[in-house]
Length: 358
Image (cartoon, helix red, strand yellow):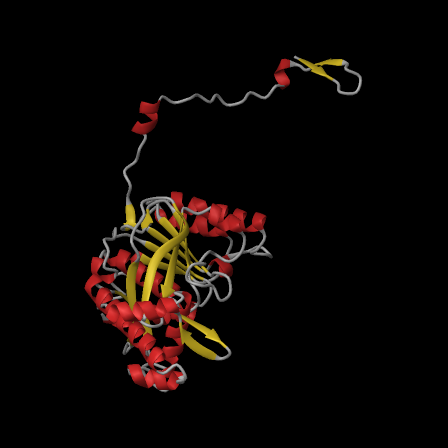
């Protein structure tokens, strides 16, 4: 083989033995390609596909850990009533690095509330509460999968597991997520879910994992949780990316509960929230109630434009704090506006209130 020297155009002969052979790559016929289709399978329908990597992004207090705990219990028991969704019964690995103590208490209370004997499912959920590198996690889970495969691997959270020095660095963020991808290929082809935080003070329409956009590039989907303060409902959906079939938002609620096995140092029980599914009928009824309150507030402001938030709260039978939250919501809808410290109903708001009353 001849090679030309760029400086003096001198020909150089490269021995054939030194040429690296490239692997043979062939095109596939369309029919053959399509015959390789593998039917879709889910750990939780229709949210989590098997052998897929997801982020679960939500602000603090909006239910990341709460959802992951009940998801683990649903899969370990195979009970669809826990999430209100069909699940594939199997084994779960729960990696808790951010707040193991909180996770421990939440598991105990959720199990008591859902009438689950932790001893009966003890082998179905394994916990890792000491941070090690992803490659070490992979080796340990692969070893465990030799005796019983896994259906779900949970990582709580990305920020607590990350072993780089800058989560906002594109190279580091993307590379770290790629190091988690092999977890989806261990025995059982589990779904891997990584809890993530959004940017500080993120709004409902900006629930993308904090840090480099490379994180989103490496996952199969970014699930999101958002708690609506007015209703107390938590909506599970997705943003930014979803490889798979779209689904409608799914509603959950927080139920406060305690456990006789969980006491403080003085022997007192205490309450922690557990996520529970909400029926479509209950969600629609709660939405209707809130819509009626929004309308009542618009009319109260229109009737007393110089009134205070406390006076408007009395008019609709709600606390002043609820009125303030509703004003912010109505402002986004352009039904009210604020200026010089006063709130006013916009022309659009007056029309809405008038049409609803006619």
